[in-house]
Image 1: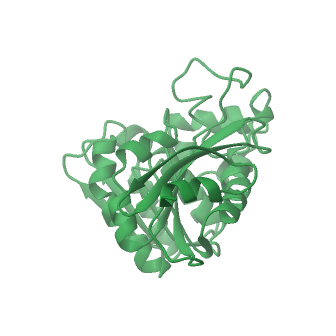
Image 2: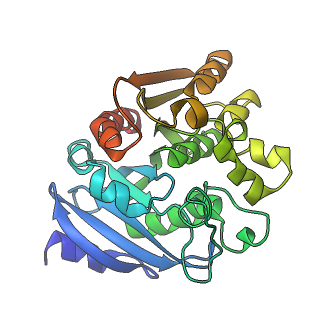
Length: 289
């Protein structure tokens, strides 16, 4: 039996293997399951480097951005060689619930593909859009039971909306994540136009929205030791939607070590993400051990 076939056979109960393939000595798999959190079928990908029987490896969670699925980073992120070299598992969930019966919106930056990693409290979104619970509770429990992960060594990263999710989750659970980084994150959604999604999902409660805003969380006392953020200076969303200077100011005031790397000439695409992905994998791996 090949390692890919073994990976397909070994996944836990409740997981359906969509595909597995050998890559850089390890196995890239795509899986789906019925989610209690979202009330839908959810799909995610996992890359497991080659490892000894019984060995458990650190994990990096990767959260994708607006309009994306698990497939964007899986196909274009160029993470496998670095993860194999550093011996780190890489998990990439979807960005929202999906399906014919799941509420959607005509706007490209809201609804399906744009869950913003929150648990919606407003109808009709609250029926399915429970991505916070999904990525912080349900999926980690499922993955930990099905793959050789050392859950004491977790890092988290993401791109754009996923960078927002990575920052807010790490700031909320600093004891869970040893490392956090982001690519072109939305750092202060309550201060930018994309933040209207928080209003539609969470309503008028300002405290609820501040809990999903990295800058606000830091202002309100949340702390991590350090952050790595890469941002392209040719990103069309830089000045209106991303505003990394707000995170820079908040981290300076809070004493958080922020390595904000403005990358000249880079845009918002996966050409940007893939260029610096190996740097992020190495940065996380150094902190995960």
